[in-house]
Image (cartoon, rainbow, N blue to C red):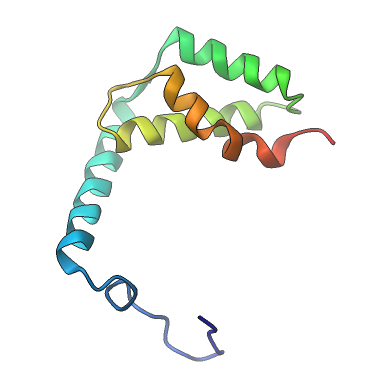
Length: 102
């Protein structure tokens, strides 16, 4: 969809006509956001985050932080109270893609 300057942005409802499903997704997102602060990282997940950062030659700490935050967000979205290695592996490629030393 091409937008022109000054044009009104389409609403979520216009792009997503199934209102019931949209309401469910909004509710799930609100629940995940409220749970996010209580989601913890297991020692195994922390070890994996560190190992992935080293293996992928990630510069600095931002890659580690992006990976940890992404894994916590996924865990909250899935209703888990702890980050597992599966959460870390699921978000690793996206979290680390732009942070590799070239």
